[in-house]
Amino acid sequence: MDFGELENDKFFVDKVENLSNSIDIITDHIKAACDFPNYEELATEDKVKFDLYLSYSINSLFWMLCKLQAIDTNEHGIKNEISRVRTAMTRHKQIIDRNTIRPVIDVGAAGRFIRHGLWDPNKPKDKDLLAPKAKKRRAED
Image (cartoon, rainbow, N blue to C red; front, side, top):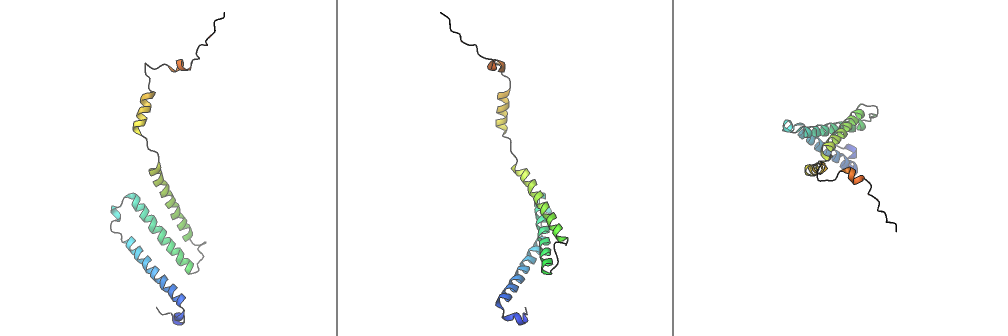
């Protein structure tokens, strides 16, 4: 790179080279993600994660480009697009949590509850259990 008059400014040169290296790394990652060979073989959940990752990454990079070019991102449509992708990510997380964190029924325990709750002819009736006991009276002398 030709830095011209700023060639002696070590801080500036390091920052620009660091930015250039970061852009190259990001470019490589996006190319690898876009050319993902086994996309059709992924499960639906993995496809959704992959698509959300790509959408959020590309929109964030575009937002950074707008900021670097001094475009007001508050009035640009990219802000709405990023919030839409965030909403989709939140919704995806809720769906995953609902499918993985919900309670599981212990079939054996449920069977025991039902079996012991059924009527048994040898058990006393509930009415007999709740009836008041006869009071003991003292015999008067």
